[in-house]
Length: 435
Image (cartoon, rainbow, N blue to C red; front, side):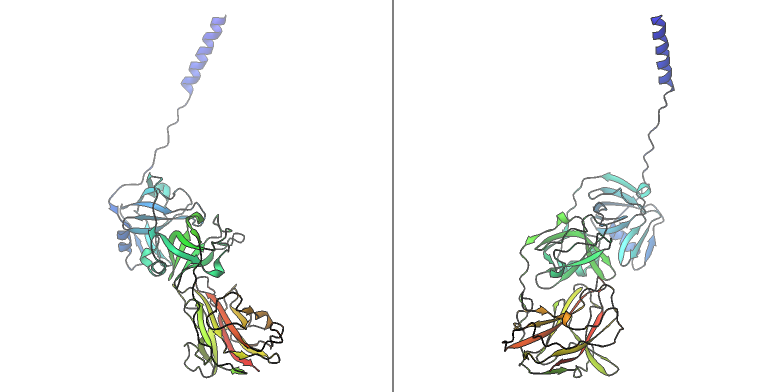
């Protein structure tokens, strides 16, 4: 009986094995091969046109230098070969990583300009890309900040810039707005002159991390938006900015003769759109290269400051206009008028007022030189009526300055702007009085 049971079990096992279905592995799809083409040849085919479409098999052999892992890029990567680098946009996210060696079949794909950035559009990885190897370690190209800021042919390259630091206002700040998922532009500079925009997505996994407070090197992908070159960080670990900050000497500006009263209407500045040049006044851009400009409307002369029209290497501006030395008397009051135009939503601190008892023409940026007194005055609001002048009201600064003080004071009008962030509101000053 046991032999019969054993025999039946064996028959069942054989039958089950015989009926077990074997599934074939899905075929590995690979894009068609064909003649190779280089990135510089791709760009040459585009030429001055806005779009070029490939109609035959052409294969680009390249290495991925920027991917989506950090979230700073989305549905896009950057690749390079021996002749250059280019941006790749994709209909779907994921699949390509830094260090992947790939082949892209370009048949049916378009190369185009997107806000001045040359890209290969809508590359479907499953249909158009063959991965040849992975784990490569592409190294950045060392460039200067001025080259990065003014050389469109460097767009899409992986670059490294040494001896840079974030602007003071952009240090120890979130890279982007992680809460509201809003991209943010920060700026880096070198000692002396020259700045570059660093743009970070609000969706990046380091958006809420703080920007460095020191000087050093930065590595990233150099993109372009319109006329503005901008850097995309792949990972904050590629920033090594722990060295001491630049020590830049403040400009040495001779002080004018002290005056007991002031009544400036800017009517002497009749050459419009030129730097305001008044005896005893200081007019300079602490960050950038712009100044307060002469302006006239319906016969009314006034001073104007704006970041409109600024471009790299001058994206950010902090423009000062400082009165001559004013002989301080507690009874005298200070007043002026302001207006704004072409308001930029969210423009931070576009117009401020400062007072100093220690400014000497060389210590513009020194800590403790200036006291912010903007709140002591009424300033034209971003939500107000464009070109409508607003009376500031009068203040005598007696609450800030000791009653026994017998020296001079300086009042500074400061405009802050940033063209890449679209903070370009115009501000105007008129009828400055110290009586």
